Figure (cartoon, rainbow, N blue to C red):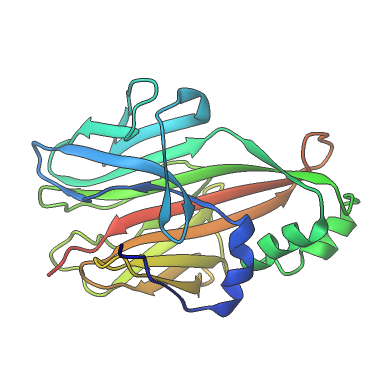
Length: 266
């Protein structure tokens, strides 16, 4: 039995994994012929390894295939796994986007939330929590996922754009373009505005299954430039953490943005 080898580049990341599960669109192939199918799982897990989620409309507020200015809702059957299995549109770059309905997590002790906040780069969380008059414990967090995957149909050429997710990655370079080099450039948005100095966590998966995790930051315009490798697939992750005032259900809102794609082997 071959076990998956995981290399963690940033040692400080380890403490946060117990309370940080990513959610993403995961495809066996991100390059599809024009006559083919776009097939992918919705996954929830850690270190680019997760459990496939079924097509359940009650769990999402949006599930769309976007190409240029054309948007088409994903229409599946209740319980479908993979959750995404649709005919490929015409030749070009295609984005699939998905936003979940809110979920909640209960924190019985402060330390677990502090580890999560530290891992996602909110080092001032204790001061913010106290300033808002929130209880040390127990309390609840509400979270939603806002994910995008890039597929190259045929030539795969085209330009990604913002599609109105609460928080999202916009690819400023196209990994399927023949002229693509070794750097992926993305802009991180929240409510349509660039997130300056935001942490971007990158999961880099080689064809062997080895996963390398690195941390990066956006510039003043919310742009991060991230080295990538031919033949590898990627999950980018960025989190927004906002207080909820005057709500008895939860005291923090967490909005997770994710982007997945693959760099063709050349």
